[in-house]
Image: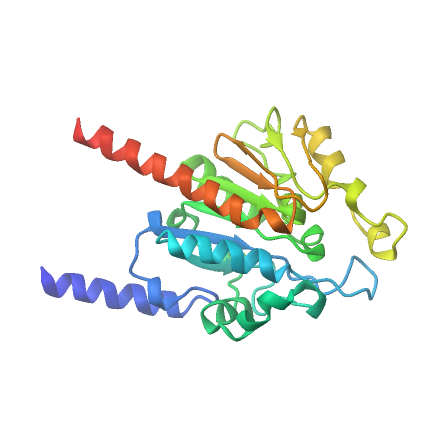
Length: 266
């Protein structure tokens, strides 16, 4: 039996090594221990040449929270491989983390959606940054992954800042929008520089999209952390909300685990 478990662990490690963005250090952990970060691949805004980027701090702050709670993190993007990180999206306190290979290896080698087995994950986390408006919201495989985690795994869907764009098109198995009837937040159009060229490239507006699908969109002051938790959907308004979003996800998963243990004990 011991030999079987050793062979099983080796096979899991080999499988994980073949998937871009999947950390082999956590490959033997079960699906209940994994969180999938969904990032955008776009390096520009829409059809322009205006540079776009992920929000590095929104990755780091959430990653730190999940790791501290015992969860492994994997990365996926529409195109796989390296995702763009612009200097202006890296605050001074985050600069040292650009040398943190535990995170950077994942961001340089994100998995493609086709490489992801959604059955392995307890939650998804949509990372913000201005490029989150492109490629992710309309991606059918990423949509299927998220809804598998939410409906079939009983997991959590979370997003922060512009990452909320990624959930506006998600639909339940019955065809109803995920956000319908839910309290949602994200980076609203009223906080954007609406006369800027980048804003003119946006394919849709986050608040408007959520409300048109029956969601109740809520925000607070521009730079204050603010999150909404509605069942197993957790959203954050801005960069400052990344850590609170991750903490809320961890709390939900711990409650689910406690309830599951309680049911098994009866």
